[in-house]
Length: 83
Image (cartoon, rainbow, N blue to C red; front, side):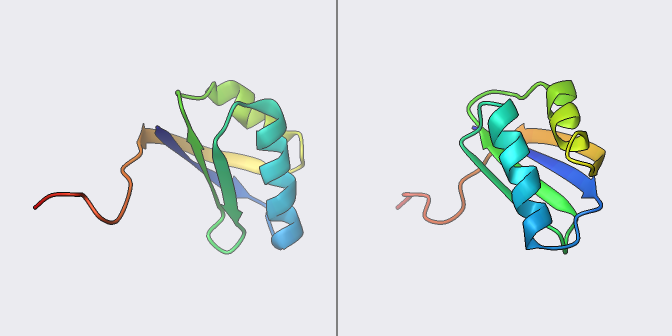
């Protein structure tokens, strides 16, 4: 899994978060997407790396502005199963 973090400018409320989440889901093959207007961030989990330009285009089309995009392998938190 790949975790992509997007710095998004302009989100002011929960409805803004929903608009961004919906735009990302429609444009890209994602497993999970969540946004936080207080952090100014959208976090996306996907099986493979996302097309950054398609991601930027999808979010920018909603009226919000993508400031930065970073991706890294996703590490699950919690129990590791080691004894």
